Length: 113
Length: 110
Image (cartoon, rainbow over all chains, first blue to last red; front, side):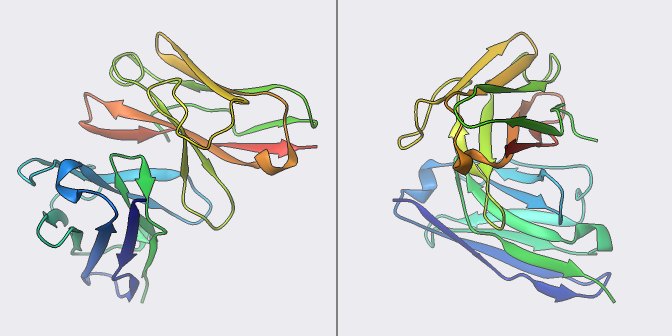
Protein backbone atom coordinates (compact mmCIF):
# COMPACT_ATOMS: atom_id res chain seq x y z
CA UNK A 1 0.00 0.00 0.00
CA UNK A 2 1.36 3.39 -0.98
CA UNK A 3 2.12 5.78 1.86
CA UNK A 4 3.04 9.45 1.50
CA UNK A 5 4.24 11.41 4.51
CA UNK A 6 4.77 15.16 4.33
CA UNK A 7 6.95 17.14 6.72
CA UNK A 8 8.57 20.55 7.02
CA UNK A 9 5.56 22.75 7.61
CA UNK A 10 5.35 25.37 10.34
CA UNK A 11 4.96 29.02 11.18
CA UNK A 12 7.08 31.44 9.15
CA UNK A 13 7.16 35.20 8.79
CA UNK A 14 6.23 36.89 5.51
CA UNK A 15 9.22 36.84 3.18
CA UNK A 16 10.61 33.73 4.80
CA UNK A 17 11.35 30.30 3.40
CA UNK A 18 10.40 26.69 4.09
CA UNK A 19 11.27 23.37 2.49
CA UNK A 20 8.60 20.69 2.47
CA UNK A 21 9.40 17.02 2.03
CA UNK A 22 7.22 14.07 1.07
CA UNK A 23 8.52 10.57 1.74
CA UNK A 24 6.98 7.79 -0.31
CA UNK A 25 6.87 4.10 0.52
CA UNK A 26 5.09 0.98 -0.69
CA UNK A 27 5.47 1.94 -4.34
CA UNK A 28 8.15 2.38 -7.02
CA UNK A 29 8.42 6.14 -6.58
CA UNK A 30 10.30 6.75 -9.82
CA UNK A 31 7.39 5.35 -11.84
CA UNK A 32 5.06 8.20 -10.93
CA UNK A 33 4.69 11.89 -11.60
CA UNK A 34 4.03 13.89 -8.46
CA UNK A 35 2.20 17.05 -7.50
CA UNK A 36 1.88 19.47 -4.61
CA UNK A 37 -1.64 20.66 -3.87
CA UNK A 38 -2.59 23.12 -1.15
CA UNK A 39 -5.80 23.82 0.66
CA UNK A 40 -6.43 27.02 2.60
CA UNK A 41 -8.69 26.78 5.66
CA UNK A 42 -12.30 26.36 4.58
CA UNK A 43 -11.41 26.37 0.88
CA UNK A 44 -11.06 23.75 -1.83
CA UNK A 45 -7.80 22.20 -3.04
CA UNK A 46 -5.61 24.25 -5.38
CA UNK A 47 -2.86 22.76 -7.52
CA UNK A 48 0.60 24.20 -6.84
CA UNK A 49 3.22 22.31 -8.83
CA UNK A 50 3.89 19.21 -10.91
CA UNK A 51 7.00 17.17 -11.66
CA UNK A 52 7.40 14.27 -14.04
CA UNK A 53 8.86 10.87 -13.23
CA UNK A 54 12.53 11.70 -13.79
CA UNK A 55 12.32 15.29 -12.57
CA UNK A 56 13.15 16.86 -15.92
CA UNK A 57 9.80 18.56 -16.40
CA UNK A 58 8.18 20.86 -13.87
CA UNK A 59 5.21 23.22 -13.99
CA UNK A 60 3.84 25.74 -11.53
CA UNK A 61 0.67 27.64 -10.79
CA UNK A 62 1.04 31.33 -11.66
CA UNK A 63 0.56 32.24 -8.00
CA UNK A 64 3.84 30.53 -7.00
CA UNK A 65 5.92 30.76 -10.16
CA UNK A 66 9.35 32.20 -9.42
CA UNK A 67 8.98 31.67 -5.67
CA UNK A 68 8.51 27.89 -5.31
CA UNK A 69 10.64 25.06 -6.70
CA UNK A 70 9.62 21.43 -6.92
CA UNK A 71 12.21 18.66 -7.06
CA UNK A 72 12.58 14.97 -6.34
CA UNK A 73 15.22 12.46 -5.32
CA UNK A 74 14.22 9.09 -6.72
CA UNK A 75 17.07 7.38 -4.86
CA UNK A 76 15.54 8.59 -1.59
CA UNK A 77 11.89 8.19 -2.68
CA UNK A 78 11.32 11.79 -1.68
CA UNK A 79 9.58 14.80 -3.19
CA UNK A 80 10.44 18.36 -2.19
CA UNK A 81 8.94 21.83 -2.38
CA UNK A 82 11.25 24.77 -1.71
CA UNK A 83 9.10 27.79 -0.84
CA UNK A 84 10.68 31.24 -0.84
CA UNK A 85 9.30 34.78 -0.42
CA UNK A 86 6.32 33.40 1.44
CA UNK A 87 3.17 35.47 1.68
CA UNK A 88 0.16 35.37 3.98
CA UNK A 89 -1.91 33.97 1.12
CA UNK A 90 0.37 30.92 0.98
CA UNK A 91 -1.06 29.79 4.33
CA UNK A 92 -2.59 26.35 3.76
CA UNK A 93 -2.27 22.64 4.30
CA UNK A 94 0.14 21.35 1.67
CA UNK A 95 -0.44 17.85 0.29
CA UNK A 96 1.80 15.79 -1.91
CA UNK A 97 -0.07 13.55 -4.32
CA UNK A 98 1.08 10.65 -6.48
CA UNK A 99 -0.49 10.91 -9.94
CA UNK A 100 -3.26 12.72 -8.05
CA UNK A 101 -4.51 9.33 -6.88
CA UNK A 102 -2.80 8.78 -3.52
CA UNK A 103 -2.42 11.75 -1.19
CA UNK A 104 -0.43 12.33 1.96
CA UNK A 105 -1.98 13.56 5.20
CA UNK A 106 -0.71 17.10 4.62
CA UNK A 107 1.54 19.55 6.44
CA UNK A 108 0.36 22.97 7.63
CA UNK A 109 2.18 26.09 6.50
CA UNK A 110 1.27 29.31 8.30
CA UNK A 111 2.69 32.62 7.10
CA UNK A 112 2.20 35.35 9.64
CA UNK A 113 4.10 38.01 11.52
CA UNK B 1 -12.66 31.51 -8.56
CA UNK B 2 -12.23 27.89 -9.66
CA UNK B 3 -11.73 26.80 -13.26
CA UNK B 4 -14.32 24.07 -12.73
CA UNK B 5 -17.79 24.99 -11.50
CA UNK B 6 -19.65 22.88 -8.97
CA UNK B 7 -22.82 23.64 -7.00
CA UNK B 8 -21.77 24.67 -3.48
CA UNK B 9 -24.24 22.33 -1.83
CA UNK B 10 -26.39 19.27 -2.39
CA UNK B 11 -28.62 17.23 -0.12
CA UNK B 12 -30.72 14.12 0.04
CA UNK B 13 -32.36 11.70 2.42
CA UNK B 14 -31.04 8.20 3.12
CA UNK B 15 -31.66 5.88 0.18
CA UNK B 16 -32.09 8.69 -2.34
CA UNK B 17 -29.97 9.33 -5.43
CA UNK B 18 -28.09 12.60 -5.74
CA UNK B 19 -26.03 14.01 -8.57
CA UNK B 20 -23.21 16.54 -8.40
CA UNK B 21 -22.23 18.40 -11.55
CA UNK B 22 -18.87 19.79 -12.65
CA UNK B 23 -18.67 22.23 -15.54
CA UNK B 24 -15.46 23.15 -17.33
CA UNK B 25 -14.19 24.14 -20.75
CA UNK B 26 -12.61 22.76 -23.88
CA UNK B 27 -9.11 23.11 -22.41
CA UNK B 28 -9.85 20.95 -19.39
CA UNK B 29 -12.85 18.62 -19.17
CA UNK B 30 -13.36 18.79 -22.93
CA UNK B 31 -9.88 17.36 -23.47
CA UNK B 32 -9.03 15.26 -20.42
CA UNK B 33 -10.55 12.74 -18.06
CA UNK B 34 -12.04 13.75 -14.72
CA UNK B 35 -11.28 12.61 -11.19
CA UNK B 36 -13.61 12.95 -8.23
CA UNK B 37 -12.52 13.18 -4.60
CA UNK B 38 -14.37 12.80 -1.31
CA UNK B 39 -13.07 14.78 1.66
CA UNK B 40 -14.21 14.14 5.20
CA UNK B 41 -13.56 16.85 7.83
CA UNK B 42 -9.93 17.05 8.90
CA UNK B 43 -8.70 14.52 6.34
CA UNK B 44 -7.01 14.61 2.96
CA UNK B 45 -9.05 14.29 -0.23
CA UNK B 46 -9.61 10.65 -1.15
CA UNK B 47 -9.89 9.45 -4.74
CA UNK B 48 -13.44 8.38 -5.46
CA UNK B 49 -13.46 8.16 -9.26
CA UNK B 50 -10.82 8.38 -11.99
CA UNK B 51 -10.88 8.43 -15.78
CA UNK B 52 -14.45 9.80 -15.62
CA UNK B 53 -16.14 6.62 -14.45
CA UNK B 54 -13.61 4.21 -12.94
CA UNK B 55 -13.84 3.35 -9.27
CA UNK B 56 -10.70 2.56 -7.26
CA UNK B 57 -10.88 -0.68 -5.34
CA UNK B 58 -12.89 -0.27 -2.18
CA UNK B 59 -15.24 2.39 -3.51
CA UNK B 60 -18.84 1.07 -3.46
CA UNK B 61 -20.69 0.74 -6.75
CA UNK B 62 -23.25 3.20 -5.35
CA UNK B 63 -20.86 5.81 -6.73
CA UNK B 64 -20.77 6.38 -10.48
CA UNK B 65 -19.29 8.99 -12.78
CA UNK B 66 -19.91 10.27 -16.27
CA UNK B 67 -18.66 12.90 -18.68
CA UNK B 68 -20.19 14.61 -21.69
CA UNK B 69 -18.48 17.38 -23.61
CA UNK B 70 -17.18 19.93 -21.13
CA UNK B 71 -19.18 18.68 -18.15
CA UNK B 72 -18.92 15.77 -15.77
CA UNK B 73 -21.11 14.43 -13.01
CA UNK B 74 -20.91 12.21 -9.97
CA UNK B 75 -23.95 10.22 -8.91
CA UNK B 76 -24.49 8.63 -5.53
CA UNK B 77 -27.34 6.17 -5.21
CA UNK B 78 -28.68 4.62 -2.02
CA UNK B 79 -27.45 7.64 -0.05
CA UNK B 80 -26.02 6.84 3.37
CA UNK B 81 -25.19 9.07 6.32
CA UNK B 82 -21.48 8.36 5.90
CA UNK B 83 -21.60 9.93 2.44
CA UNK B 84 -21.89 13.35 4.09
CA UNK B 85 -18.70 15.06 2.97
CA UNK B 86 -17.21 17.57 0.54
CA UNK B 87 -16.82 16.41 -3.07
CA UNK B 88 -14.39 17.86 -5.61
CA UNK B 89 -13.88 17.29 -9.31
CA UNK B 90 -10.46 17.74 -10.93
CA UNK B 91 -8.82 17.45 -14.32
CA UNK B 92 -5.71 18.56 -16.22
CA UNK B 93 -5.97 21.88 -18.03
CA UNK B 94 -3.99 21.97 -21.27
CA UNK B 95 -3.88 25.77 -21.39
CA UNK B 96 -2.74 26.25 -17.79
CA UNK B 97 -0.52 23.15 -17.94
CA UNK B 98 -1.70 22.24 -14.48
CA UNK B 99 -4.46 20.55 -12.56
CA UNK B 100 -7.68 22.43 -11.91
CA UNK B 101 -10.21 21.68 -9.21
CA UNK B 102 -13.83 22.48 -8.72
CA UNK B 103 -14.83 24.69 -5.81
CA UNK B 104 -16.39 21.72 -4.05
CA UNK B 105 -19.88 20.55 -3.19
CA UNK B 106 -20.90 19.99 0.40
CA UNK B 107 -23.24 17.02 0.53
CA UNK B 108 -25.68 16.88 3.43
CA UNK B 109 -27.64 13.74 4.26
CA UNK B 110 -30.88 14.91 5.84
